Amino acid sequence: MEIAPELLAELGGKKEPDKGLAALSGAEGGVVMRFAPNPNGPPTVGSARGIIINSEYVRRYGGRFLLRFDDTDPVNKRPMPEAYGWYIEDCRWLGAVPDEVIIASDRLPRYYEVAEELIKRGGAYVCRCDQATFKALKDGAKPCPHRGTSPEENMALWGEMINGGLGPGDAVLRIKTDILHKDPALRDWAAFRIVTADHPRVGDRYRVWPLLDFESAVEDHLLGVTHILRGKDLMDSERRQRYLYDHMGWNYPKTIHWGRIKIHQFGSFSTSALRRALEAGEYSGWDDARMPTVRALRRRGIRPEALRKFIIELGVGETDISISMDSVYAENRKIIDPSARRRFFVKDPVEMEIGGEIPEVATAPFHPTLDLGLREIPAGPKLLVSADDLADLKAGVRFRLKDLCNVEVVSTDPLRGRVIGTDPHQAKEMKLRIIHWAPPDGVPVRVMRPDGVDSGIGEVGIREDLDRIVQFERYGFVRIDYVSQDGVVAYFAHR
RNA sequence: GCUCCGGUAGUGUAGUCCGGUCAAUCAUUCCGGCCUUUCGAGCCGAAGACCCGGGUUCAAAUCCCGGCCGGAGCACCA
Image 1 (cartoon, rainbow, N blue to C red):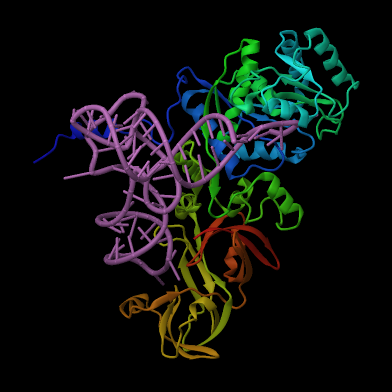
Image 2 (cartoon, rainbow, N blue to C red):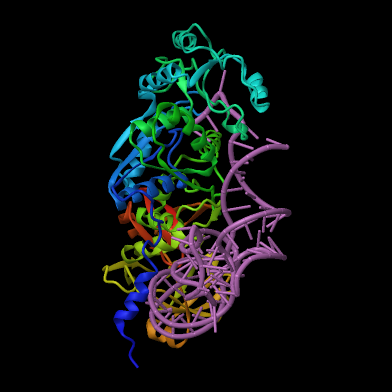
Protein backbone atom coordinates (compact mmCIF):
# COMPACT_ATOMS: atom_id res chain seq x y z
CA MET A 1 0.00 0.00 0.00
CA GLU A 2 1.21 3.45 -0.92
CA ILE A 3 0.98 6.36 1.46
CA ALA A 4 0.04 9.64 -0.10
CA PRO A 5 3.29 11.63 -0.36
CA GLU A 6 1.58 14.98 0.07
CA LEU A 7 0.28 13.85 3.45
CA LEU A 8 3.75 12.81 4.52
CA ALA A 9 5.15 16.14 3.42
CA GLU A 10 2.50 17.90 5.44
CA LEU A 11 3.27 15.89 8.53
CA GLY A 12 7.00 16.44 8.12
CA GLY A 13 6.68 20.14 7.48
CA LYS A 14 4.63 20.77 10.56
CA LYS A 15 7.28 20.06 13.12
CA GLU A 16 10.31 22.02 12.06
CA PRO A 17 9.51 25.65 11.40
CA ASP A 18 12.68 27.02 12.99
CA LYS A 19 15.30 24.40 13.37
CA GLY A 20 18.29 25.53 15.38
CA LEU A 21 17.55 29.05 16.47
CA ALA A 22 14.33 29.98 18.22
CA ALA A 23 12.22 32.72 16.71
CA LEU A 24 12.61 36.22 18.14
CA SER A 25 9.48 37.99 19.21
CA GLY A 26 8.89 41.40 17.70
CA ALA A 27 11.51 40.88 15.02
CA GLU A 28 9.25 40.83 11.99
CA GLY A 29 10.13 44.33 10.83
CA GLY A 30 13.86 43.76 11.15
CA VAL A 31 16.24 43.95 14.07
CA VAL A 32 19.19 45.91 15.34
CA MET A 33 21.49 43.77 17.44
CA ARG A 34 24.92 44.26 18.87
CA PHE A 35 27.81 42.28 20.14
CA ALA A 36 29.52 44.31 22.83
CA PRO A 37 32.85 42.93 24.05
CA ASN A 38 35.53 44.50 26.16
CA PRO A 39 38.61 44.42 23.93
CA ASN A 40 40.97 43.15 26.60
CA GLY A 41 42.02 40.13 24.54
CA PRO A 42 41.06 38.37 21.32
CA PRO A 43 37.67 36.72 20.75
CA THR A 44 37.28 33.29 22.32
CA VAL A 45 34.86 30.51 21.54
CA GLY A 46 32.49 32.23 23.96
CA SER A 47 32.74 35.46 21.98
CA ALA A 48 32.09 33.48 18.81
CA ARG A 49 28.75 32.52 20.26
CA GLY A 50 27.80 36.17 20.70
CA ILE A 51 29.06 37.13 17.27
CA ILE A 52 27.39 34.25 15.47
CA ILE A 53 23.99 34.25 17.17
CA ASN A 54 23.55 38.02 16.95
CA SER A 55 24.59 38.17 13.32
CA GLU A 56 22.52 35.12 12.47
CA TYR A 57 19.37 36.78 13.78
CA VAL A 58 20.16 39.88 11.76
CA ARG A 59 20.67 37.75 8.68
CA ARG A 60 17.37 36.04 9.31
CA TYR A 61 15.18 39.04 10.04
CA GLY A 62 17.06 41.76 8.21
CA GLY A 63 18.47 44.82 9.95
CA ARG A 64 21.84 45.79 11.34
CA PHE A 65 24.58 43.99 13.21
CA LEU A 66 26.70 46.27 15.36
CA LEU A 67 30.05 45.64 16.98
CA ARG A 68 30.44 47.85 20.03
CA PHE A 69 33.51 48.01 22.19
CA ASP A 70 32.59 48.56 25.82
CA ASP A 71 36.03 49.82 26.76
CA THR A 72 35.22 52.09 29.66
CA ASP A 73 37.50 50.67 32.32
CA PRO A 74 41.10 51.75 31.77
CA VAL A 75 42.24 50.03 34.95
CA ASN A 76 40.65 46.72 35.93
CA LYS A 77 39.82 45.54 32.43
CA ARG A 78 42.29 47.59 30.54
CA PRO A 79 41.68 47.42 26.80
CA MET A 80 44.43 46.09 24.50
CA PRO A 81 44.93 48.38 21.50
CA GLU A 82 45.46 45.40 19.17
CA ALA A 83 42.29 43.66 20.30
CA TYR A 84 39.92 46.08 18.54
CA GLY A 85 41.29 44.91 15.19
CA TRP A 86 41.25 41.29 16.27
CA TYR A 87 37.52 41.43 16.89
CA ILE A 88 36.83 42.95 13.50
CA GLU A 89 39.07 40.40 11.83
CA ASP A 90 37.47 37.45 13.58
CA CYS A 91 33.94 38.74 12.94
CA ARG A 92 34.75 38.89 9.26
CA TRP A 93 36.23 35.40 9.33
CA LEU A 94 33.12 34.07 11.04
CA GLY A 95 30.99 35.55 8.29
CA ALA A 96 29.63 38.32 10.49
CA VAL A 97 30.92 41.59 9.09
CA PRO A 98 29.51 44.35 11.32
CA ASP A 99 27.40 47.03 9.70
CA GLU A 100 28.88 49.52 12.12
CA VAL A 101 31.65 49.58 14.71
CA ILE A 102 31.15 51.73 17.80
CA ILE A 103 33.79 52.48 20.38
CA ALA A 104 32.48 53.64 23.73
CA SER A 105 35.64 55.53 24.65
CA ASP A 106 34.97 57.81 21.67
CA ARG A 107 31.56 58.74 22.92
CA LEU A 108 31.95 60.08 26.46
CA PRO A 109 30.45 63.50 25.63
CA ARG A 110 27.16 61.82 24.71
CA TYR A 111 27.11 59.99 28.00
CA TYR A 112 27.74 63.23 29.85
CA GLU A 113 24.75 64.80 28.13
CA VAL A 114 22.49 62.00 29.29
CA ALA A 115 23.96 62.20 32.80
CA GLU A 116 23.20 65.90 32.99
CA GLU A 117 19.68 65.37 31.75
CA LEU A 118 19.18 62.72 34.42
CA ILE A 119 20.48 65.08 37.09
CA LYS A 120 18.07 67.79 35.90
CA ARG A 121 15.19 65.36 36.03
CA GLY A 122 16.13 64.32 39.55
CA GLY A 123 16.95 60.78 38.37
CA ALA A 124 20.59 60.86 39.38
CA TYR A 125 22.64 62.31 42.21
CA VAL A 126 26.24 62.71 43.19
CA CYS A 127 27.00 60.44 46.11
CA ARG A 128 30.00 61.19 48.26
CA CYS A 129 29.76 58.19 50.58
CA ASP A 130 32.71 55.86 50.56
CA GLN A 131 32.02 52.44 49.14
CA ALA A 132 31.62 50.60 52.44
CA THR A 133 29.35 53.24 53.92
CA PHE A 134 27.05 53.19 50.98
CA LYS A 135 26.91 49.40 50.93
CA ALA A 136 25.88 49.34 54.58
CA LEU A 137 23.12 51.87 53.98
CA LYS A 138 21.97 50.14 50.84
CA ASP A 139 21.86 46.72 52.46
CA GLY A 140 19.75 48.26 55.20
CA ALA A 141 17.43 49.85 52.63
CA LYS A 142 18.39 53.31 53.90
CA PRO A 143 18.92 56.28 51.60
CA CYS A 144 22.33 57.88 51.76
CA PRO A 145 22.56 61.51 52.91
CA HIS A 146 23.16 62.73 49.36
CA ARG A 147 20.05 61.22 47.88
CA GLY A 148 17.97 64.30 48.51
CA THR A 149 20.45 66.82 47.11
CA SER A 150 18.83 69.28 44.70
CA PRO A 151 19.44 69.01 40.96
CA GLU A 152 21.23 72.37 40.99
CA GLU A 153 23.65 71.27 43.67
CA ASN A 154 24.14 67.90 41.97
CA MET A 155 24.97 69.68 38.75
CA ALA A 156 27.62 71.72 40.53
CA LEU A 157 29.13 68.60 42.10
CA TRP A 158 29.03 66.82 38.74
CA GLY A 159 30.99 69.76 37.35
CA GLU A 160 33.58 69.27 40.06
CA MET A 161 33.88 65.60 39.20
CA ILE A 162 34.63 66.55 35.63
CA ASN A 163 36.90 69.53 36.19
CA GLY A 164 38.99 67.98 38.90
CA GLY A 165 37.56 69.51 42.01
CA LEU A 166 36.84 65.98 43.22
CA GLY A 167 39.32 63.11 43.07
CA PRO A 168 39.07 59.37 42.52
CA GLY A 169 36.96 57.80 45.26
CA ASP A 170 35.51 61.14 46.37
CA ALA A 171 32.25 60.80 44.50
CA VAL A 172 30.16 58.77 42.10
CA LEU A 173 27.02 59.59 40.17
CA ARG A 174 24.19 57.28 41.13
CA ILE A 175 20.95 56.47 39.37
CA LYS A 176 17.97 56.80 41.64
CA THR A 177 15.97 53.57 41.71
CA ASP A 178 13.95 52.29 44.64
CA ILE A 179 15.93 52.24 47.86
CA LEU A 180 13.33 49.89 49.34
CA HIS A 181 13.48 47.42 46.48
CA LYS A 182 13.52 43.91 47.86
CA ASP A 183 16.54 43.02 45.78
CA PRO A 184 19.50 44.94 47.19
CA ALA A 185 21.30 44.55 43.89
CA LEU A 186 18.95 47.03 42.28
CA ARG A 187 19.13 49.88 44.78
CA ASP A 188 20.63 53.18 43.55
CA TRP A 189 23.41 51.92 41.35
CA ALA A 190 26.57 53.76 40.37
CA ALA A 191 26.68 55.18 36.85
CA PHE A 192 29.94 57.16 36.77
CA ARG A 193 33.14 57.19 38.78
CA ILE A 194 36.32 59.20 38.66
CA VAL A 195 39.32 57.49 37.06
CA THR A 196 42.48 59.43 36.47
CA ALA A 197 44.43 56.62 34.81
CA ASP A 198 45.27 56.97 31.12
CA HIS A 199 43.04 55.16 28.68
CA PRO A 200 44.92 53.33 25.90
CA ARG A 201 42.90 55.07 23.21
CA VAL A 202 41.99 58.49 24.54
CA GLY A 203 44.74 59.07 27.08
CA ASP A 204 43.88 61.45 29.90
CA ARG A 205 41.14 63.31 28.03
CA TYR A 206 38.49 62.18 30.51
CA ARG A 207 38.53 61.67 34.25
CA VAL A 208 34.90 60.65 34.71
CA TRP A 209 34.09 57.27 33.20
CA PRO A 210 30.71 55.53 32.95
CA LEU A 211 30.19 52.04 34.34
CA LEU A 212 28.83 49.24 32.21
CA ASP A 213 25.19 49.56 33.20
CA PHE A 214 25.13 53.20 32.22
CA GLU A 215 27.22 52.99 29.08
CA SER A 216 25.44 49.93 27.78
CA ALA A 217 21.97 51.20 28.60
CA VAL A 218 22.54 54.55 26.93
CA GLU A 219 24.24 53.10 23.87
CA ASP A 220 21.53 50.54 23.30
CA HIS A 221 19.05 53.38 23.18
CA LEU A 222 21.21 55.69 21.07
CA LEU A 223 21.92 52.93 18.56
CA GLY A 224 18.30 51.83 18.32
CA VAL A 225 19.05 48.29 19.46
CA THR A 226 15.88 46.21 19.33
CA HIS A 227 17.04 42.94 20.89
CA ILE A 228 19.78 42.34 23.43
CA LEU A 229 21.40 38.97 23.83
CA ARG A 230 23.43 38.71 27.00
CA GLY A 231 24.64 36.31 29.64
CA LYS A 232 22.26 35.64 32.48
CA ASP A 233 24.88 37.02 34.85
CA LEU A 234 23.61 40.36 33.54
CA MET A 235 19.97 39.70 34.30
CA ASP A 236 20.01 42.30 37.04
CA SER A 237 21.40 44.80 34.56
CA GLU A 238 18.14 44.89 32.74
CA ARG A 239 16.24 45.60 35.93
CA ARG A 240 18.72 48.29 36.93
CA GLN A 241 18.77 49.88 33.51
CA ARG A 242 15.00 50.03 33.30
CA TYR A 243 15.06 52.72 36.00
CA LEU A 244 17.29 54.84 33.78
CA TYR A 245 14.99 54.23 30.82
CA ASP A 246 12.02 55.26 32.92
CA HIS A 247 13.71 58.48 34.02
CA MET A 248 14.42 59.28 30.38
CA GLY A 249 11.13 58.05 28.99
CA TRP A 250 12.76 55.47 26.73
CA ASN A 251 11.59 51.99 25.75
CA TYR A 252 13.72 49.08 26.79
CA PRO A 253 14.79 46.61 24.07
CA LYS A 254 13.75 42.97 24.27
CA THR A 255 16.27 40.81 26.06
CA ILE A 256 17.29 37.17 25.78
CA HIS A 257 19.70 35.55 28.20
CA TRP A 258 21.99 32.61 27.98
CA GLY A 259 23.82 30.59 30.58
CA ARG A 260 27.50 30.10 31.09
CA ILE A 261 29.38 27.92 28.66
CA LYS A 262 32.12 25.52 29.59
CA ILE A 263 34.07 23.45 27.09
CA HIS A 264 35.39 20.03 28.09
CA GLN A 265 38.59 20.43 26.14
CA PHE A 266 39.38 23.85 27.56
CA GLY A 267 37.74 23.88 30.98
CA SER A 268 36.40 27.23 32.09
CA PHE A 269 38.35 30.26 31.08
CA SER A 270 38.12 34.01 31.12
CA THR A 271 39.97 36.42 28.92
CA SER A 272 41.64 37.95 31.96
CA ALA A 273 42.83 34.56 33.19
CA LEU A 274 44.14 33.61 29.76
CA ARG A 275 45.95 36.90 29.57
CA ARG A 276 47.70 36.28 32.86
CA ALA A 277 48.71 32.77 31.80
CA LEU A 278 50.00 34.07 28.49
CA GLU A 279 52.01 36.80 30.16
CA ALA A 280 53.44 34.20 32.52
CA GLY A 281 54.80 32.37 29.48
CA GLU A 282 52.47 29.38 29.57
CA TYR A 283 51.45 29.87 25.95
CA SER A 284 53.32 30.82 22.81
CA GLY A 285 50.65 33.35 21.85
CA TRP A 286 46.93 33.98 21.55
CA ASP A 287 46.86 31.48 18.69
CA ASP A 288 48.65 28.71 20.57
CA ALA A 289 47.03 25.36 19.68
CA ARG A 290 45.93 25.00 23.29
CA MET A 291 44.06 28.34 23.39
CA PRO A 292 40.26 28.55 23.28
CA THR A 293 40.46 31.55 20.98
CA VAL A 294 38.94 31.96 17.55
CA ARG A 295 42.37 32.64 16.08
CA ALA A 296 43.77 29.42 17.53
CA LEU A 297 40.94 27.39 16.00
CA ARG A 298 41.53 29.11 12.68
CA ARG A 299 45.21 28.28 12.83
CA ARG A 300 44.38 24.65 13.50
CA GLY A 301 42.22 24.41 10.42
CA ILE A 302 38.76 24.68 11.90
CA ARG A 303 36.48 26.21 9.30
CA PRO A 304 34.12 29.03 10.26
CA GLU A 305 31.12 27.18 8.83
CA ALA A 306 31.73 24.34 11.27
CA LEU A 307 31.79 26.75 14.18
CA ARG A 308 28.67 28.52 12.98
CA LYS A 309 26.71 25.32 12.60
CA PHE A 310 27.79 24.11 15.99
CA ILE A 311 26.93 27.34 17.77
CA ILE A 312 23.60 27.78 16.07
CA GLU A 313 22.65 24.26 17.07
CA LEU A 314 23.56 25.07 20.67
CA GLY A 315 20.83 27.68 20.67
CA VAL A 316 20.31 30.21 23.45
CA GLY A 317 19.09 28.37 26.56
CA GLU A 318 19.41 29.85 30.03
CA THR A 319 20.91 26.70 31.47
CA ASP A 320 24.64 26.60 31.99
CA ILE A 321 26.12 24.19 29.54
CA SER A 322 29.20 22.08 29.41
CA ILE A 323 29.95 21.19 25.84
CA SER A 324 32.50 19.18 23.92
CA MET A 325 34.48 20.25 20.91
CA ASP A 326 33.67 16.85 19.41
CA SER A 327 30.63 18.26 17.66
CA VAL A 328 32.68 21.05 16.11
CA TYR A 329 35.25 18.52 15.01
CA ALA A 330 32.59 16.29 13.48
CA GLU A 331 31.17 19.22 11.52
CA ASN A 332 34.60 20.34 10.46
CA ARG A 333 35.60 16.88 9.31
CA LYS A 334 32.63 16.75 6.98
CA ILE A 335 33.60 20.09 5.51
CA ILE A 336 37.31 19.54 5.01
CA ASP A 337 37.43 15.84 4.19
CA PRO A 338 36.58 16.20 0.47
CA SER A 339 39.38 18.68 -0.18
CA ALA A 340 42.04 17.56 2.29
CA ARG A 341 45.01 15.95 0.59
CA ARG A 342 46.27 12.77 2.16
CA ARG A 343 49.87 12.74 3.32
CA PHE A 344 52.08 10.35 5.24
CA PHE A 345 53.44 11.51 8.55
CA VAL A 346 55.29 9.04 10.74
CA LYS A 347 55.22 9.91 14.38
CA ASP A 348 58.18 8.75 16.47
CA PRO A 349 59.86 7.10 13.48
CA VAL A 350 61.79 3.83 13.66
CA GLU A 351 63.99 2.71 10.77
CA MET A 352 63.19 -0.55 9.07
CA GLU A 353 65.49 -2.31 6.64
CA ILE A 354 63.67 -4.14 3.91
CA GLY A 355 65.15 -6.81 1.71
CA GLY A 356 63.84 -8.00 -1.61
CA GLU A 357 62.53 -6.11 -4.59
CA ILE A 358 61.16 -2.94 -3.09
CA PRO A 359 59.69 -0.38 -5.53
CA GLU A 360 61.72 2.81 -5.90
CA VAL A 361 58.70 4.99 -5.66
CA ALA A 362 55.14 4.77 -4.45
CA THR A 363 52.28 6.37 -6.33
CA ALA A 364 49.41 7.22 -4.05
CA PRO A 365 46.15 9.13 -4.54
CA PHE A 366 45.65 12.41 -2.72
CA HIS A 367 42.19 11.23 -1.75
CA PRO A 368 40.79 7.73 -1.33
CA THR A 369 37.51 8.28 -3.16
CA LEU A 370 37.64 11.63 -4.95
CA ASP A 371 39.92 12.48 -7.84
CA LEU A 372 42.37 14.92 -6.32
CA GLY A 373 45.31 13.60 -8.32
CA LEU A 374 48.30 11.48 -7.41
CA ARG A 375 51.50 11.99 -5.51
CA GLU A 376 54.79 10.16 -5.69
CA ILE A 377 56.75 9.19 -2.63
CA PRO A 378 60.29 7.94 -3.05
CA ALA A 379 60.90 4.59 -1.36
CA GLY A 380 63.94 2.38 -0.88
CA PRO A 381 65.48 -0.40 1.19
CA LYS A 382 65.35 1.74 4.30
CA LEU A 383 62.02 3.21 5.42
CA LEU A 384 60.54 4.72 8.54
CA VAL A 385 57.52 3.41 10.37
CA SER A 386 55.88 4.68 13.52
CA ALA A 387 56.79 3.32 16.92
CA ASP A 388 53.05 3.21 17.59
CA ASP A 389 52.68 0.49 14.96
CA LEU A 390 55.49 -1.62 16.33
CA ALA A 391 54.01 -2.46 19.68
CA ASP A 392 52.95 -6.05 18.96
CA LEU A 393 55.16 -6.72 15.99
CA LYS A 394 56.99 -10.07 15.96
CA ALA A 395 59.11 -11.89 13.43
CA GLY A 396 56.85 -13.56 10.90
CA VAL A 397 54.11 -10.96 11.09
CA ARG A 398 53.04 -9.63 7.72
CA PHE A 399 51.61 -6.26 6.90
CA ARG A 400 51.23 -3.90 4.00
CA LEU A 401 53.07 -0.63 3.62
CA LYS A 402 50.28 1.45 2.22
CA ASP A 403 50.50 2.17 -1.50
CA LEU A 404 53.85 0.39 -1.69
CA CYS A 405 54.27 -3.32 -0.95
CA ASN A 406 53.56 -6.21 1.37
CA VAL A 407 56.30 -7.22 3.80
CA GLU A 408 57.03 -9.83 6.38
CA VAL A 409 58.96 -9.02 9.53
CA VAL A 410 62.27 -10.87 9.70
CA SER A 411 63.47 -9.48 12.99
CA THR A 412 62.37 -6.74 15.35
CA ASP A 413 65.69 -5.69 16.86
CA PRO A 414 67.00 -4.38 14.60
CA LEU A 415 63.82 -4.05 12.63
CA ARG A 416 64.13 -5.94 9.37
CA GLY A 417 61.66 -7.17 6.82
CA ARG A 418 61.45 -8.56 3.34
CA VAL A 419 59.13 -7.88 0.46
CA ILE A 420 56.61 -10.62 -0.17
CA GLY A 421 54.69 -8.89 -2.93
CA THR A 422 53.33 -5.61 -4.14
CA ASP A 423 49.76 -6.45 -5.03
CA PRO A 424 47.16 -4.74 -2.81
CA HIS A 425 44.66 -7.48 -3.60
CA GLN A 426 47.04 -10.01 -2.19
CA ALA A 427 47.16 -7.93 0.98
CA LYS A 428 43.41 -7.88 1.10
CA GLU A 429 43.13 -11.62 0.65
CA MET A 430 45.66 -12.17 3.39
CA LYS A 431 43.82 -9.61 5.56
CA LEU A 432 47.04 -7.76 6.27
CA ARG A 433 47.00 -4.71 8.44
CA ILE A 434 47.99 -1.59 6.63
CA ILE A 435 50.41 0.92 8.01
CA HIS A 436 51.89 4.05 6.55
CA TRP A 437 55.56 4.95 6.24
CA ALA A 438 58.01 7.66 5.20
CA PRO A 439 61.38 7.77 3.48
CA PRO A 440 64.35 8.37 5.81
CA ASP A 441 65.19 11.61 4.03
CA GLY A 442 61.64 12.94 4.40
CA VAL A 443 60.81 16.24 5.98
CA PRO A 444 60.90 16.71 9.75
CA VAL A 445 57.46 17.62 11.02
CA ARG A 446 56.30 18.99 14.34
CA VAL A 447 52.60 18.85 15.11
CA MET A 448 51.28 21.39 17.60
CA ARG A 449 48.32 19.82 19.37
CA PRO A 450 45.96 21.04 22.09
CA ASP A 451 47.43 18.30 24.28
CA GLY A 452 51.10 18.61 23.40
CA VAL A 453 53.56 18.33 20.54
CA ASP A 454 54.24 15.33 18.29
CA SER A 455 57.32 15.02 16.12
CA GLY A 456 58.24 12.79 13.25
CA ILE A 457 59.03 12.58 9.57
CA GLY A 458 56.67 13.15 6.71
CA GLU A 459 56.73 12.77 2.96
CA VAL A 460 58.50 15.74 1.37
CA GLY A 461 55.42 16.79 -0.59
CA ILE A 462 54.03 18.26 2.62
CA ARG A 463 56.25 21.25 1.87
CA GLU A 464 53.87 22.11 -0.97
CA ASP A 465 50.88 22.31 1.34
CA LEU A 466 51.64 25.49 3.23
CA ASP A 467 48.41 26.93 4.68
CA ARG A 468 46.46 23.94 3.41
CA ILE A 469 44.43 21.59 5.54
CA VAL A 470 45.62 18.04 4.92
CA GLN A 471 45.02 14.68 6.49
CA PHE A 472 47.98 12.83 7.86
CA GLU A 473 46.75 9.32 7.17
CA ARG A 474 45.85 7.31 10.23
CA TYR A 475 46.74 10.33 12.36
CA GLY A 476 44.34 13.19 11.81
CA PHE A 477 43.63 16.47 10.08
CA VAL A 478 46.15 19.27 10.39
CA ARG A 479 46.81 22.67 8.91
CA ILE A 480 50.31 23.20 7.53
CA ASP A 481 51.35 26.37 9.31
CA TYR A 482 55.01 26.87 8.51
CA VAL A 483 57.52 25.46 6.03
CA SER A 484 61.26 26.06 6.08
CA GLN A 485 64.54 24.40 5.14
CA ASP A 486 64.57 22.73 8.51
CA GLY A 487 61.11 21.26 8.34
CA VAL A 488 57.43 21.78 8.71
CA VAL A 489 55.18 22.89 11.54
CA ALA A 490 51.59 21.64 11.45
CA TYR A 491 48.69 22.57 13.72
CA PHE A 492 46.41 19.72 14.71
CA ALA A 493 42.69 20.12 14.10
CA HIS A 494 41.22 16.76 15.09
CA ARG A 495 41.25 13.11 14.11
C1' G B 1 22.37 36.63 54.65
C1' C B 2 19.12 39.07 50.72
C1' U B 3 17.56 38.50 45.55
C1' C B 4 17.05 36.22 40.76
C1' C B 5 17.40 32.22 37.15
C1' G B 6 17.59 27.19 35.58
C1' G B 7 17.11 21.38 35.89
C1' U B 8 14.73 16.46 28.85
C1' A B 9 19.70 10.34 27.01
C1' G B 10 27.28 10.63 28.29
C1' U B 11 27.16 15.82 25.97
C1' G B 12 24.13 19.51 23.67
C1' U B 13 19.19 20.28 21.75
C1' A B 14 13.48 20.25 20.09
C1' G B 15 8.95 20.12 22.70
C1' U B 16 7.16 23.60 28.09
C1' C B 17 4.12 29.97 26.93
C1' C B 18 -1.59 27.93 24.46
C1' G B 19 -1.79 20.21 28.89
C1' G B 20 -3.73 15.25 24.81
C1' U B 21 -1.16 13.91 18.15
C1' C B 22 5.55 12.83 23.12
C1' A B 23 5.57 4.73 24.10
C1' A B 24 9.49 12.46 23.39
C1' U B 25 13.13 15.41 18.04
C1' C B 26 17.86 16.12 15.99
C1' A B 27 23.18 16.23 16.40
C1' U B 28 27.36 14.39 18.70
C1' U B 29 29.48 10.40 21.56
C1' C B 30 29.57 5.07 22.50
C1' C B 31 28.57 -0.06 20.59
C1' G B 32 27.68 -3.58 16.39
C1' G B 33 27.73 -4.50 10.98
C1' C B 34 28.88 -3.07 5.71
C1' C B 35 32.33 -0.60 2.62
C1' U B 36 37.30 1.17 2.06
C1' U B 37 45.08 -0.21 0.22
C1' U B 38 43.95 5.27 6.58
C1' C B 39 42.24 4.10 12.95
C1' G B 40 39.23 9.28 7.74
C1' A B 41 34.72 9.63 4.80
C1' G B 42 30.24 7.06 3.48
C1' C B 43 26.10 3.42 4.46
C1' C B 44 23.00 0.31 7.89
C1' G B 45 21.59 -0.86 12.84
C1' A B 46 21.44 -0.53 18.23
C1' A B 47 21.68 1.67 23.08
C1' G B 48 20.47 5.87 25.89
C1' A B 49 16.40 11.08 29.02
C1' C B 50 11.46 14.27 30.97
C1' C B 51 15.56 15.99 39.12
C1' C B 52 12.22 14.11 43.40
C1' G B 53 7.44 14.27 45.96
C1' G B 54 2.64 15.94 46.24
C1' G B 55 -1.61 18.51 43.87
C1' U B 56 -5.12 20.08 39.68
C1' U B 57 -7.15 17.21 35.45
C1' C B 58 -10.51 12.25 31.87
C1' A B 59 -5.20 13.45 30.51
C1' A B 60 1.06 16.64 32.90
C1' A B 61 7.80 16.84 30.17
C1' U B 62 4.10 20.80 29.75
C1' C B 63 -0.06 24.03 34.99
C1' C B 64 0.37 24.74 40.81
C1' C B 65 2.98 23.84 45.61
C1' G B 66 7.12 21.89 48.36
C1' G B 67 11.95 19.80 48.29
C1' C B 68 16.72 18.66 46.16
C1' C B 69 20.62 20.05 42.88
C1' G B 70 23.15 23.66 39.84
C1' G B 71 24.29 28.76 38.34
C1' A B 72 24.20 34.05 38.94
C1' G B 73 23.77 39.12 41.18
C1' C B 74 24.18 42.11 45.76
C1' A B 75 31.65 46.52 42.76
C1' C B 76 33.71 53.41 42.07
C1' C B 77 34.70 45.22 36.68
C1' A B 78 32.84 43.94 31.95
